[in-house]
Image 1 (spheres, rainbow, N blue to C red):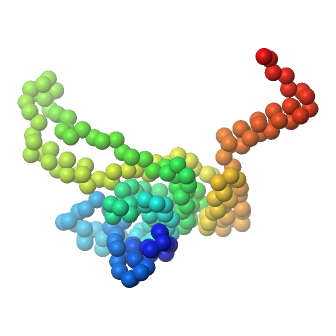
Image 2 (tube, rainbow, N blue to C red):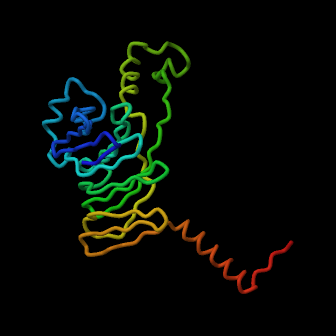
Image 3 (tube, helix red, strand yellow):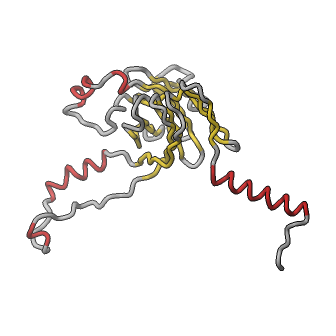
Length: 232
């Protein structure tokens, strides 16, 4: 469990249930137990849930920011918005095995590590709004004849409304461990440290940032030695 603000905290269980509690009166502010499928499915909900393996819905870790709670559920990652009280983004198969640890980064980014030995960086992005009406199909519609079936377009619109408004996009994959990555620590100015069951501790650096720092130090050194001449 983790605290999300001064008056609330969140708990997760191995049966895939997340509850947000009020610390003052111990009441339930919100509850989410549909991580296996963030889109509502009234007809098959119970049947699908019974088919899930325990590891697929087990909540392993939480992190948070001012707007969202980020949950590591089975092999996937889920973003739960505190104001909307719903899942707004997910990656059901973020890794090949259970996600063990996650952390929030600046610029709407997220880091996750897994039993499969991988460490990945994700970015929370808003999805582009789709057109309200489906594209006409068929031979006659291809040449402009006929009209779109309004009744047939209703399930499509409903599906778009129920779909998560955001997505988690993979922007980085750190390859270096050969066994389960148990945990990591993030330092904003110094990079990322990961530890694994392969007995290795690896320090990862931002290549672009480090290259800029090395260039800056080089120019400073040349300026100190009087070897730097600038044309005016």
